Length: 434
Image (cartoon, rainbow, N blue to C red; front, top):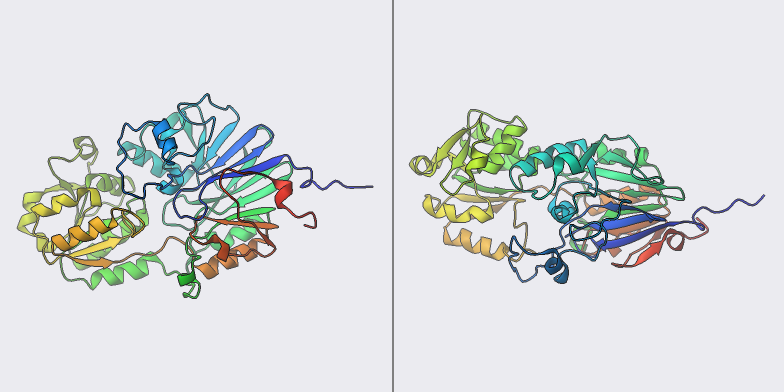
């Protein structure tokens, strides 16, 4: 009796729209016959000259400059494909930044933790133009669901610096694919370390490689916990602190609040961040939010358990304050006695020199006569840890992406580096001997 090789007769294809040779933007599509599953829908950072996109920029204009890829049947200007679902691994802009352009009839799924944060971000205006209640559905971890007749998806928790971060296992009738999303491993981690056990050995493993770069290959693979690193470092700073954070990292907010308590300082957040502090029940007697004339009063009106503080009040006792200042609000610092303060850049935007406005941030810090301290903890596993994860998954084919040098990662068997825009049949990727 001859048993057919299901891979050789596969009807499943995969296509990558973004995420190759970059750490900005991730989108790929798995298709079984006419059924489509899209993993992540991230903003593609093509804006190398620092051109500021107008709020009214049209979809066609964004497609022309490469911010939106040539993907059909899902955008607001498209005739939608009724057989498509978008799944989100976590809520960083390079994985969800294009959701605002998705047609309202295209279903979007994410973990329960991500959905909770997404609802709050929508409330403060960060995730506009999405009908969250109707369009976005949450799925529990470890519970397989059918997103179409033949495509099954299961979410698994992983450690990253955003609540609800997930890996996914996608199963079609003829193949199994695991996508890690973005992952971190540190000494207290359980979720990412357990992924090989709970997700099994797939035909394809799609794995992030953010820290798989030449300069990181020999770095100690232990990624310390944020709390252990940041509280100790913050307590050593004796000047007033101006901090820039990525407030989707809810754990980082909790850490800052605790460090300020230990240092006996008031910690003052911008209204949007204060709303998140309230939403995740991190209010404390030493927490305030900054109330200025140009603030969105709609957001301030939603904050009921945190007291406001004005610029005049800050001026009177600035030495006793830790103050949040996002880059787009940095001009407010001109109204405060920040000379001699420490500007703590803690994984906020702009994150690094690859962002066109990073140099402008450095110029502002110099102009305001503050001292820059870069203080953060990577949300991504070290290169050696990514290698361990790939080896442990024992996939027939490993596809590294979401990194500048994905070719440095070699899977345990075959490794494949895809190109953007090419549709790859699964049978063409899996060697028959596997």
